[in-house]
Image 1: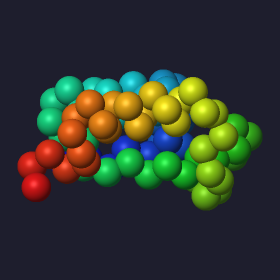
Image 2 (image 1 turned 90 degrees about the horizontal axis):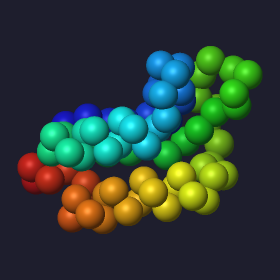
Image 3 (image 1 turned 90 degrees about the vertical axis):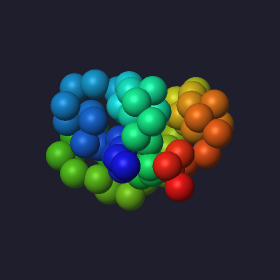
Length: 72
C-alpha cells in the first residue's frame, strides 16, 4: 500500500490529487498524509489543507474506492 504525501508530490511538480487517483485506480491507496507545506519550503510543515476543492476531490476519491486500504 502507498502513503501519498502532498508535499512530496509537489516537489515532483504534479498535484497531490494525481497521485491519490493513480494509487486508487491501481488498488494501492493505503493512506493519505493530508499535511501540506509552504510553497517556498522543500519540506512538509504540518499545515492543514486549505484548498477546499482539492480536499473534497481527495475525499471523493477515497469514498469512491470504498475506504482506505482496500486490501484489508
